[in-house]
Amino acid sequence: MKPSTKALWSGWALVIVCAALAVAAALWNASRGERTRATARLQTSSEIVHDLQAQELEMLQLRAQTLAGDPAFVDYVTQSLVPNPQLGGAVDNLSISDLLKQRRHGDDIVMLLDPAGTPITAIGTLGKDRASISHDPLVVASISQLTTVQGAWLDHGDLLWVVVSPLLRGRTPQGYLITASRADGSFFAKIGRLVHSDVALVLDASPQPVSYSSGVDAGLVELLGAHRQEILATGSEQGTGMHLQSADIWVTPLKLGGGHAALVALNPATRSDRGIDQETFWSLVGIAFFAICAAFYVWLQWFFTWRPLARLADAFDNDRHAMAAIGGSALVRDVRDRLVLLMTREKRPT
Image (cartoon, rainbow, N blue to C red):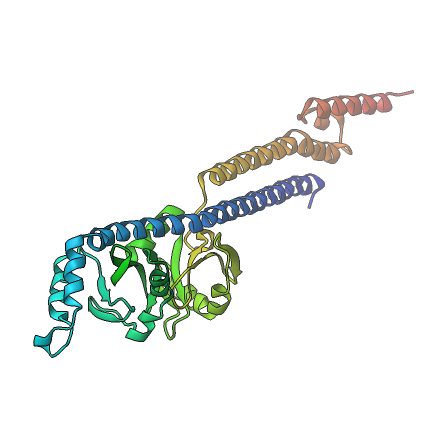
């Protein structure tokens, strides 16, 4: 390979290497920036979860207070809880159930407890047994404090918002009203939209450790299930960031009356279908433009300098007429003219 041709290819190779390094740096910086921004978004998931949970409980408590604060309802429940001789000394559960159905107001579960906290009747399906309800921390707190208590339950993989309200005559409890609403998929989907991320609910229940996975593929669901104990060990209300193999996650523990659960937001940067953002795209376009310009400049250098010098070297052994036909840049022409002049002087007779 001629030196001029080698110089051309070497120049182009240098341009390609520099362009490749610039592209790699731009993509690495974009990936790091996206991961940083995504992590910042994930950190807001804890605040969003707490805010949405507070809103759900507030709405549930307002509906519960409408019923528990109604003197007519309290009086009716009080009279119904008195053993009825016509029913063999039993409580009139049927009339209480009918009243609860009429005053349900769209709640998934409405339950009445007696003054000791024992379940009397319920509307809606609940998997918790009577004993666990009576000893539930929310129920115990409401009985001991004679005040409305709110929180969450975990019932066979379902997350329920729960409000326990005392039915009072003066300061004397006549019973306790439990209203509950299930956190369905729309609740988690809303969190995902606000955080721009996929979300999942991780439980300590078995055999279903992950529930309400919104947008999470089967591989990540299995990964979350495999690290369930590690995820549920998180205790900070502000949430904790973790890295699980192919996923960055942010874990927000949920306070429950019984059991353990955590809401997990997954970093969108781990998705395989993510594309190049607009800023990175234009950076790559700029790199490509400068690479083309640099390659063209290398070609100009070869065309006007290296190639004429190669031709000049080939014609050096010939006469000055062959050298005079060689063009090129101003520097090459100056060298050519000096060589021609030198050869002319050497050929003059002494």
